Image (cartoon, rainbow, N blue to C red; front, side, top):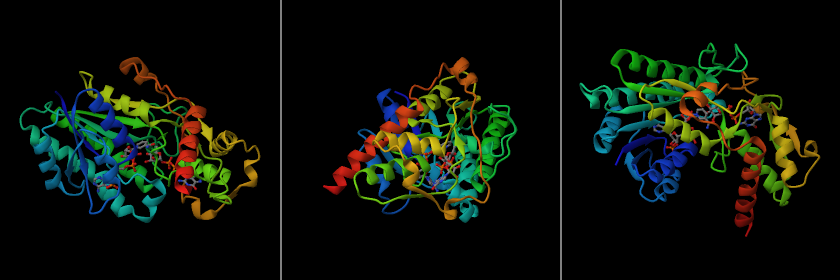
Length: 326
Ligand code: NDP
Ligand code: GDR
């Protein structure tokens, strides 16, 4: 039986990945932090998932977790992941999203002793690293030009992962994942903010929706498909870096159109206003990834398309809001 340790197990991807690995027969450990963290309860409901306490900013807690889990595979998904928040908390974002990667790599390196390939390591890199994009579509070779403290922190983690692979021979891979969403997406991110508001507006529970930039374009996929790619990366003989994306891009306006249509509303403009408070100091205008390498080497392709994804999220929010409203 293989053993895996997941940081960020209480997040969207952590929950899907834990379920995927448990389904494959892994013994799965998830790192959780904080006192009275309500998200720990959700993770603790996954049958078979074992929880360990630790924080990415605390190397000794990571060493303890690795020694307890004795993992064959470590998936480093923990991060401060909300881009807008990273301007308000740039130091904290750097400590967790950047230096946290170094701490986790160090914990794995020290645990592995003179067997550098003993533990396979996955780093959750991001399309946000492309920022002011220098090439369309973006590939593994595209120059990185991050546009937020979060993006800068992810670039550090990305290159540190490559550096540990090259310096110590570690089996360390980075997945450059483009935006991926699901009914489990945090409500601060734009897709879930929209699908939740659409559900509430259609049920008469909310009047309108305030958003920021409606012209930004993203390559949105389904989180359930993307955790499969993480696992596939660690099953390869050689560690490497891969873009994981759908190869399609849509604007926030298109997202609004599809989400409102799902509940039979055609005139979404009547319900949406723009609020400068949701604009960012610097924007990533366009993201579209080229997943050709992942298709060729991992045999990975996304299964869920954009409309199906947004439909799934609206339906889930309708059910949740109906239940909450009694
Ligand atoms: P979430 O924001 O849903 O989850 C983030 C996780 O990180 C939570 O479990 C959170 O735990 C944990 N965390 C935060 N701070 C710390 C810390 N100091 N120590 C340990 N754990 C911590 O993110 P996603 O699931 O969406 O994303 C997973 C990873 O993939 C992240 O690294 C993200 O940056 C990256 N990514 C995500 C993409 C996406 O579109 N979803 C695209 C590309 C990359 P807690 O419950 O304690 O807050
Ligand atoms: P992103 O996702 O920044 O791409 O990071 P988010 O959903 O927050 O923003 C996407 C785009 O929507 C625009 N936008 C708004 N965004 C939010 N959150 N709220 C609004 O009201 C709003 N109005 C417009 C944004 O300006 C932006 O252009 C996500 C995270 O999961 C990162 O951790 C991950 O690395 C990247 O995706 C890939």
